[in-house]
Image 1 (cartoon, helix red, strand yellow):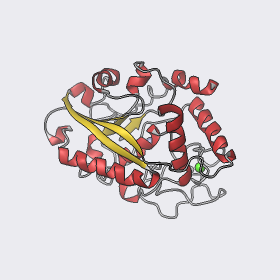
Image 2 (cartoon, helix red, strand yellow):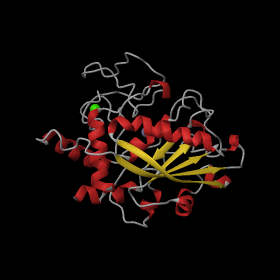
Image 3 (cartoon, helix red, strand yellow):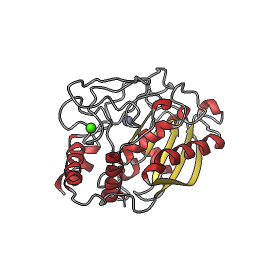
Length: 285
Ligand SMILES: [Ca+2]
Ligand SMILES: [Zn+2]
């Protein structure tokens, strides 16, 4: 349990210092960007979990026993009440929830939207005071998913926190959840990234999945056995890309944990499914 309990300590150092974009402007670039970077201790925990999964003698240890329903809260944090200021119409949030449920259904995971709230706050809308915002808005226990749709996230499309051992009411508990660029919801203005799959990607992190390109061509990579090694993130939908030619398999460009266009994303692998359920049962259940 040692490396599990040290995660909470290591985690606070994960997010600060990575922001490299102006915080008050919506994303100007055209490539997917995600701020989530695993700590060394998180990778160690994932590697240990991968070893346990590989050594499991029963093939159905981590199979779907029943649908896992995640109690979910949407928080729209806009700079004004215009759709262009991040005040997402209810109809688009409904579509966003449908995309989540469609993408996760093959893996026995569903999302029950418990409540949606709207906040107008120019500072929070641009992620200017994450902890204050989340202390005001976060709902539910550590098994609940809180998603903050914000006007700007330091130039990124989103970020989430990996599961770890937290104490209810701690800052780590409040930070848990996902920040999502408002314009990535279905019908939003982020060209090529407006089918709602940024949420699918980010929630993959919330469930304990790393990027498929984590670690590059050598070593443990993303600690998922059935995602081929990948040297770097993909952009667009580069069919046939093979960035680690000496390792087996083509790049997993269609995997939700790469950086491809929304239209290119179509799967989590069986081992990722196992990992999500294992991480959930270890840390959030
Ligand atoms: Ca892999
Ligand atoms: Zn990511």
